[in-house]
Image (cartoon, rainbow, N blue to C red; front, side, top):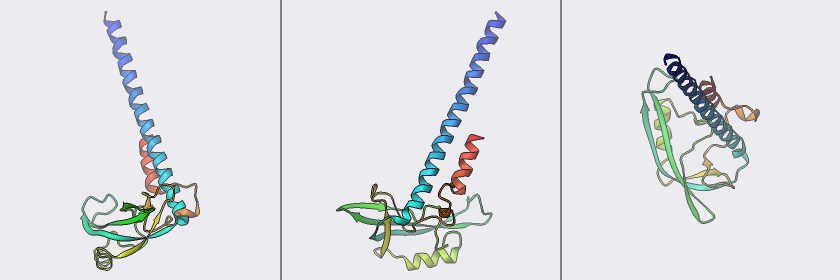
Length: 165
């Protein structure tokens, strides 16, 4: 009786471990695919059409939980609206590499200066994906990474590595 019970528990254990591994692998593949899509959109955005948009809101917040900094990091969040083929869209993406080429994320003074120079209602250029106009950015391309179109940017690669390994 003990051996039959042990073998059932053994099967349950092996099945549980296999389930966790399959879930981790599936999650890793999804994260990798998302990262590849974001990177390819970042590269493609250099050739997207531009349209005039309007700033709907701009805020600066303090992030005390930034994993890359021991001091507070100031984050700029901008929301903008634009119209493509008579339909209104709203975007928040500043760039595909997670930051801004303007360099205002992180530094308090630069963040405040960005806020002062970007007021609600102000016009700005928006790059949008002609196939999916809801996908847009204020800064096309990727910093440094767009020269090598097959390379994922480091944040996507790190997440995928952590999930796979």
